[in-house]
Image (cartoon, rainbow, N blue to C red):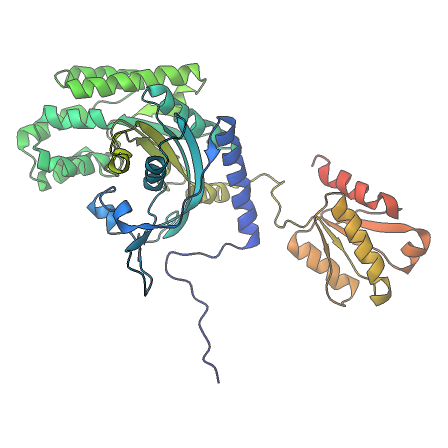
Length: 444
């Protein structure tokens, strides 16, 4: 007897059934619409990259989460892609004749061996939008405008785009007098401010052996808060001796001015100099988007990475972009009941029932006419009572059932039933397809 194989998934992986995939498609379609409205074109890259392509780009902690892959007879050491930014850098380096600025988006799965939890999986989709070859802050502001447009179009009303700059973070370390080798610990501690508070940050800094006088200067700075322009003015006061910090503050001021011209509401954007993006390749503005409820982490994250492409091309190219966490966005929309009623549970719009074997050819012909009119149509595939066929349609979320029995065929009619309301009507057979379309397109 053959051993039964347990139908179990690897930890952190998921099956996405049709109803879930339709909600996912609804979100991704809205995302694509916004990306393309701003002139970004689609790109696809392989799931597998050479391991050396990926290593050394994310930092040692992140690279512990990469999945290695190797064919039994292959010589190349391969890895599943960790994100979509490094593959983009490889593409730009390999195709240096691409017109600049090069504006691309990619929607594809990535893999990370993280500890699975709500909103975090080991295989998940990223929706990336990036501009390569544009050094000015207009490119960064446009990315943030896209984030605002996507979330607004999906129905989000309460979200905050948090904005910072790696140059400001470097300046904080310089002014505080933190040794270069202690800067990673400094950044990790600052990033936890929202979660552990000022006292917790102080204890973290002490655990990283940061000098006491540096901690004192940092604690005074971390108490700065309020409206974005006020925060930037306070940063200028505290960090005025750092040319690098001054440059970063100027970039943030320019972005805020551009976002105002782009009609992005100022209450949706907040300068937060305690926000630290974890990837090591960021060089300038960094940004992420959060919602207050549910507390699920960032929905989007990105920044400027002007030196990443140079690792492949031999010369630096300015680049900026963001990634939308599609899994978390969908999780929030489900939890907050944000999907519109028009997002159906099935792609099927109409079920043609089959009365008996003698009427099967007529039912098949009716289904063909419906499909020809643009109506997604199933024909019931088994010989079962009509009540079972209607029950199948109802359980599947199919909105319309059509009946063609002996009486209807003799009279040249087809009976339509709207399963949501139970409403029934008989229509001439030649008008059935147009009637179903009109019903499906009618406002709800």
